[in-house]
Length: 156
Image (cartoon, rainbow, N blue to C red; front, side, top):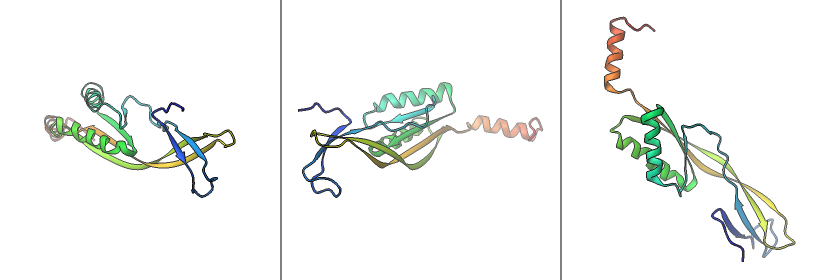
């Protein structure tokens, strides 16, 4: 018997239209394409260490960046949302959250388990979420900016 990896499953296609009866395939799910490769893009999976991702996000927001982006697909969407809400709760509303939902295209390779089968590629779609987390203006900064505008120090 073949050893299965984490992204491999077996598909028995008996009774499925367009397939021969009693044929079987091994499905190998390709990694999704990551359209964003910036330092501020954090991809959350179902297997991600929640506390580790939380620390990574807070470190980026505290030390380097004013905004970050969380990305999750499929069954990682609730985990991605929980991470964003936890960041917001831990920082007493210092950060705003802007979610966007969408759909991503995924590709699976179907490898036949028999010698007379054909290799196939299957395309499918899955739900996705992209959450922008950004630093809001702190109350002290906002008051200073308003006083500067009133006194004429800053012009538009």
